[in-house]
Image 1: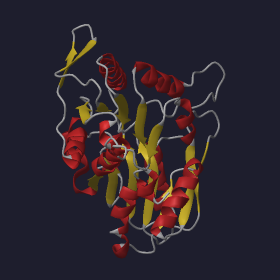
Image 2: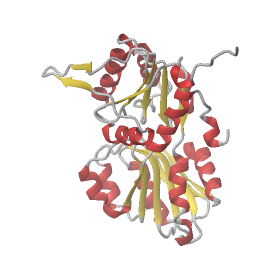
Image 3: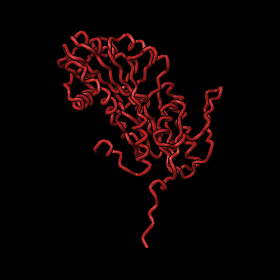
Image 4: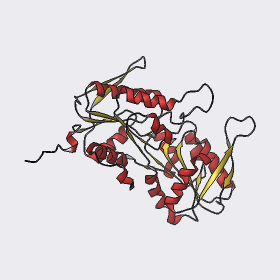
Length: 329
């Protein structure tokens, strides 16, 4: 008599999805993709700014995924994630995975000045200590942040989702070229351009005099008379991308398309983007946008959902299948 093998999905029980308050819409889309309901829990915000979490039902032995982005308000959203992870661990979940579409403090990845912290490492430690067995996130600002986690995880890129949107527009573009907002993004920008089958150019930024911020000075590459696809991983205050657009126009660019993964949009980003002479703004829903932001950007804005991508990664993690196969790796 042969050995009876346990179904892969029985190793950690069933999938349980929990939506953090910062990612309810995205979590709902992931739940629909997987065909499983969102599990209920209460998040109370007390008058003293403390948070309290209570599950509606037991997760003992289950495979649990907490979907919570850590954009603004950063510390409230981060603490909610940590408290929820600990709640699930204390309820004896079989495995707990933190699904963080946008990871806060990702730019604080090294000591670039004396007597400064490496906060991205601290955040990684807190997620692990709170109770996460695994993590998932999208397009980290710096790849070395993966090394800050001692737990296994999946760091996924959503650029192929944005790329597909841009590919659909290539036929209407005139001699398109990819433009990165600075040389630090050169490698990713080049990969983006290769995927599109178009040339790449770079914005050179320098600090001049006593100024704290670098200025976009020149474009390395040919963009005159071409449609330009400006690419970056995230837009915070939109200062860098606004400089890149103005410089591209000065260098003779035709239509300009903006592409980036994380729409962080700290003030005055929306106002800056709304004023720019761009044809299309292509981003994702790793960070939820307010209705006011959507209205201000109007028809220029196109949001690609990362829900099918995250949903498929969750399913493969649950079933013990390769995530790399999704990207032919």
